[in-house]
Length: 592
Image (cartoon, rainbow, N blue to C red; front, side, top):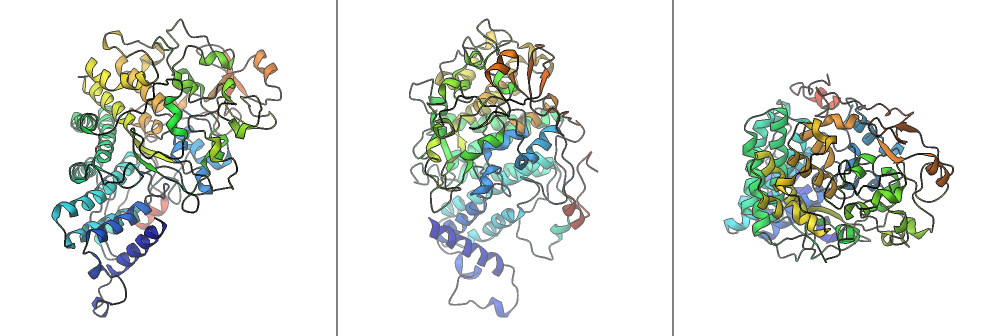
């Protein structure tokens, strides 16, 4: 594998350099090295070239689509697990995670250079376009060529969709450029026009990729089912964006999302992972090193000592912990929200929080009794939670330690930056959520739709079904302006996909930026808590709804009073250097 990656990179570099040369002498074909003119012949040539595109996609900062964990030390921030820090699910305070805190609080500004996960990675588009200009030269059947064309188009469409989601209009390029190309100085393509191009790429990929590359579930290549899941994700984003922000024909995109998800659900070989153990099945497969053959995982990134490693497990402390907002969204075991259920025990002490709640809560947030089970902080034997000011062990800003992905065995006895926690990039559970939401937004969801989607997720943890004729009306969400069924589907999405990189984008596409202005709180903090957790230096505030006192994570910091400007914060600013390089590119509204 390592040799193939090196070979791929060398070949890609050679092709990129040679393809830009027009000098008459250089057009002679060298006999001792690979050239653009002699390379594109066999299926193996196409495969090796596309391997180089996969390799570029491992840089999650430049190309945040196949997101897992960045290599080595940079896994402390460039990981899909930490993307929820942009939103209201997690509460980072570490200086190395300042960028997440700034965006979460609406305190980010126009950057000089591209921000993290921002306006960059355009060499990835070039790599895709170089391949698309040359695959047709191969002396193989068209259906074989189409496989590799489809891979490149899936990558290109997915990459551009991510850029559209953050920046709106984009500099669309679909051919290889050189230093004289007019496109280098063109204006950005309007969002809706670019999305049509993206949909063309995704449609091609969802029809021309093979159902199976014969990799046996290893983290090999993206197949047609993966393309369908990506299509459903992208179309759901665009459909809801147009519905809530304004745009042409949102139902076209919502229907495309529903159709893609349903095709995967009905015809694909995937299913939810379940062994019949509702107390463990939700997080069990998130905490293992090898996901080959897992029935729920469509695509994942493998890390292996001596090849590609991370250290992401050691940086849970940087995440700050789960928020009060997240914890309160888990239903009680009667299927009702805490605002309506008589089973809710309150949050006077942390053990009460877990009583009579959706089992996914205890598989996401550390229950004090589970520290030994998870060998928390390498089995240090300390009592948890541990909060800022307490000596030793892992510290949580909120008191709600995250254990969904925690795997002590990936750290015990391993040197720094040599851990191997995999990254789940695409899983079947998302398809179920995409389908249910698209159908609900279209206004045509049925009980059968719920049973085929949301209720399968609930069955895994033995939670009551969501019934269309008995949808609870949570008073905490009546001001959102959407039907109760949509509220519950959004809640399910937040719970099921916690720490998988979706929450920030979801709030933006739903036009729910106001939720980011709610102060970030943690555990209840009363006299009993002060006695139980000596030494804590937590700042506190009174919750305006319950009138109880809670840890207020950012009180006294630059992020204490979050803002969200509806006129600008749904999109990110274009960096100054990009504006200077091309005057035709205009800044996003509100960021001038």
